[in-house]
Image: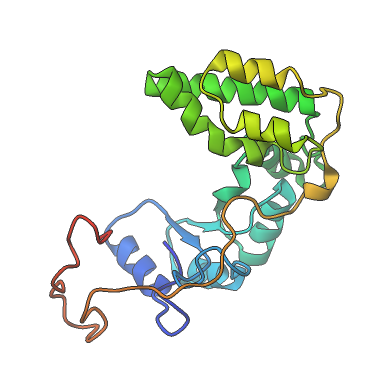
Length: 230
């Protein structure tokens, strides 16, 4: 869950306690409001507040880009674990980083694959998508959006990037990946940088009457339509 609708309607502690009373095993908080979308910084203090309020394990989410970020979050909030969202886009090895960080502490060495290793991971990722979707064209089309995330910070020409983002077969993908220089080292300047969606705050649209009364549990008309998101 998020902190709430906006800074004037923060519900995360109340929602966490309600979830705890309902018997959940743990609660995870993305420390932004819905209004923030993916803008600004995650409010790790809110995660600490929720941790203090609950007896069940609390997991923290928001701005975990490196293993070191997870260590800082745990130290700052006392949280029981972390949840990763955008941080793993184009970087599935982040989970190895997290394991190393929690095992070795601040002395861990982050995974920094050269471009050749990244290309192998990209190929494997596309193969797994094709297998999961049971359709090569559909799987390759779904993989296209991952290309920019994988190549973030690497000096790869625009034409090759565009071609990789338009692949329609695994053979075409592998042929294009062979054109990459496998010796190019991982771009250190991209460490700690946001990945995936980065956008401005946006107004949250709610069904009419949703905020009229906190004590009225009547579902407002239109709140449960297929298009509303519930």
